[in-house]
Image (cartoon, rainbow over all chains, first blue to last red; front, top):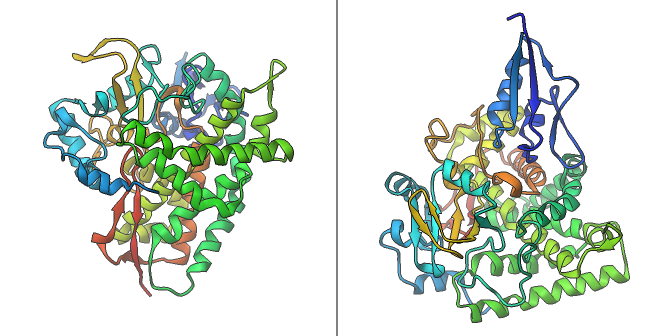
Length: 70
Length: 410
């Protein structure tokens, strides 16, 4: 590990299916249109990464990306 | 209602091979479509029909997603398969008759943004108490009866009550709403000259409601649509009426079907019912599996221009029926796709469609389904089907049980 892990939502792909903020309300929230967005800078800790991956695996639009940078 | 869908279905030629002659109102498809779809997925995987003046039915998740996301080659101008692709008086593309579901980009985005805020989680969550009260009212009305029809006595009441309040229509008109929905979604395989006149009572009803709201504006969705301005202009009246029709039609027997299918499932799977009764926190996860496994809604597109789709020679104005429920049973997309797994953690289902036409009411539908099931199983922790052969299913593009004869245990 060592590098930072961040979660992002591609706003062009998000269609407001609403799965991410239901599964992981500590990581995602919704805007006035019901589209998802990442709370804060999206940096994930070892404690939150699995939850973020679960939300990613449930997004019907494949709009969630988890990026590792060193 | 002068025409009965079931009588009509009986009168037509039964399908011998769905691969080349599919019909979503055929009695075999209506009663149990899943083996048919599994067979087509392996054999075709895109089925064809000459019925309804020609159409296609893709059965894999990948193809359904591809078409749902391809607004360049497929139009949403008509989303319900009928024998009339060009009904008179229907607003043309890009708006279509019921914006935004019948709209294409870029108009679609405008029409959708106008209504998304009303259906976002915030406003929808605020309705939860009202939905719970509605469920309780209908459960109370059942009293101590030990055998009843959970479709006719419970499932069918929840969504019309919510939608009537939202649109600002009299709740007492619920029976009429179900008649309207029956016309739009069930009585699809009629000749155009038979189907057309069936829409007149609905048009008249909506015009009356619009006139009433113009004269007496109030805090509801109808008044919002009548008064909302974009670039200083109000919406065209046909836009307002179309979105009202969409809200009513799409908001009623879709959710009613999901509630009914879920109760029907629980009546036959006491182990799943017991898990939900003993672990209420499981409900949100279970709701997603109910939605995947019994996804009620199938939506259509029309082919814009002649097109070769993975070897299928699609012609301009052919129907494409997007089987989201079939996509949800594709083993390429889901582990043990034909197994109902109540705590399925990874569940990327397409019950609310995919792409820009994702069901606008999905947050509302989910909440209604969850609350309706929570209240039902809290009242009746054990129940079973009293008469499995008495269960009937709605034909057409919204699948759900209409009669669910139940026996309450203990």
